Length: 108
Length: 121
Image (cartoon, each protein chain N blue to C red):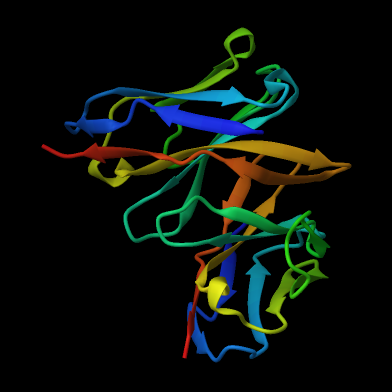
């Protein structure tokens, strides 16, 4: 089974800061990697799919990159409404999905 | 507007059973694969099970294999999760979620609001 790790597990940053989260897969997953945002008490929301594609309607301050085993998620300028937990998620072509443990982002 | 509405959650004793339902609307349900994803209180997201659009392909997480059964009724635009032999560690909010494919990329693009399952004596 493919395992996903994320770092850091939490971070605190100031409004306007650049925030970077990394996600690592235990084996090569090509670019089969998505990123989700989850606010407290809410369902997750898709932000980035296929490692670097921005979902329709998602602000351009969110971006993703990487392939193989190492991936990066970036918020270019942190906004108060970005306070949430962010999850990476890998899938294989058998409809098996694995989520990373999450990164909690809050405002300093 | 895409809507996914779960129901069927509640309190159940260890070893008991529960059936979750998800009513889908606003899209052609029969054209999409669907997932169940759960989240234990204060914990992260855990994929539970997937079913292809025609039910030809079904997959389960190891943690629920042999105890949970996913199914769908395309005529009723509904997704189900039959949960048997429930354990305390199955306590979670269960989300119904739609899978979208873009060429060979798969993603969960819509989620329901979730239904809480509590397993406790």
